[in-house]
Each structure stands twice: as C-alpha cells, then as structure tokens.
Length: 116
Image (cartoon, rainbow, N blue to C red):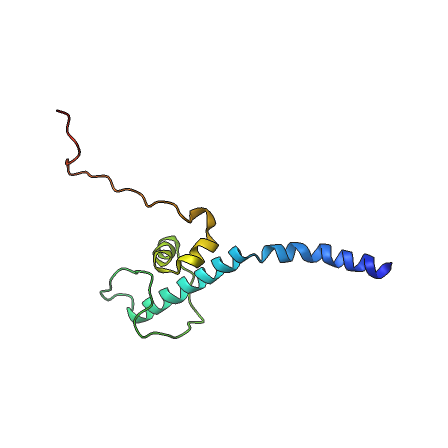
C-alpha cells in the first residue's frame, strides 16, 4: 500500500513537469534557437559598421557552424525568421496563427473606385 501511495505521489509531482514540455513548447524553442543561429551567422558574415543588407531570416551561404554564443533574436528578427522557417514547425509552435490570411495592402495611389 505504501508503494502505491508513493507511486501516486511521484506521479502527481511529475505531471506538471511533463505538461510543460509540450510539442508547442519544443517547437517554439527550436524556432528561437534557429533564429539565434541564423542571426549569429548573419552577424559573423556582415560585421557591424560595414554595409550590410537587412536580415532576411536566413543563414549566410555556406555557413553551417553552430554558434554557442548566439544571442537571442528580438521580435523583428524573429518575425523575419518565421517567414522563412518550415511552415509545419511554425504551425505547431503557434497554432493560433496557422491559416490566418495575410493582411491586405490598401491602395493609396487613388486608383480605387471613384464615385460617378
């Protein structure tokens, strides 16, 4: 009886830890790490102070290194990385954003329908 009670107590304490490690959490961690690695590759390829294109979410060509000191991405870098990342992983990490239509661009050049 004591072993059953001890087993149940261990299970009760282990459940919250197991619930925190969901596939969405793992996918988000994978995407954050991928963004950090891509931005570290970008930073290594284009040193600060020199002319460089905007970060587009991809690694520099031919750079397959793992950067152990990669800094986390900020929100704009992360959104640029998500646009280039695997859509299946993005859908797992952010299920509420999956399948949302893109924002429609409004025409501001006056070519909209004019009243007659």
